[in-house]
Image 1 (spheres, rainbow, N blue to C red):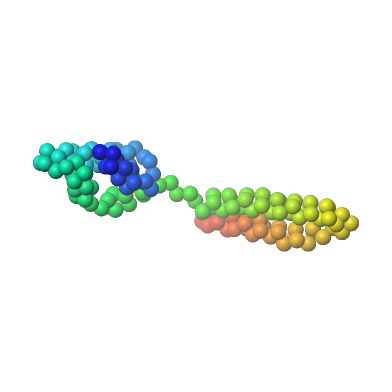
Image 2: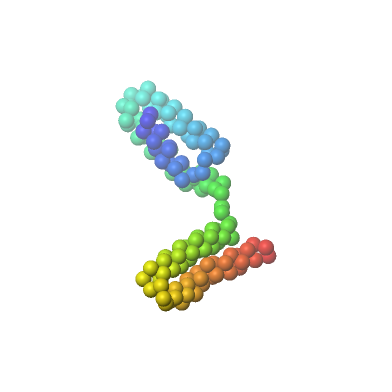
Length: 139
């Protein structure tokens, strides 16, 4: 029966855990175990009965699609703000590294300003992307 449990767990692997999906999973598992018991009473070996029950279960594509609809969808504007925060931190780290290299190797020439202007465009572009996506969400 462990084989059946593993098979059902694999079928429900990418389906979000909700009360409905857990009930459906338990119902299918119980149904398969009952089917295996019936087949074993009819004279089949346990392995043959398990394989036959799994084959007779068939494809659960429709059920999986129905249960997958409950998946939480993260809005694009939220992801855009996360990307903006990442770009701010990334740009700060890159500029900090360049500033350290500038001060350590050539303290009399302040060349770090020039690449810093280029690096600042990354968070700036991400900020305007966030504003654009937020504007779409409001309309």
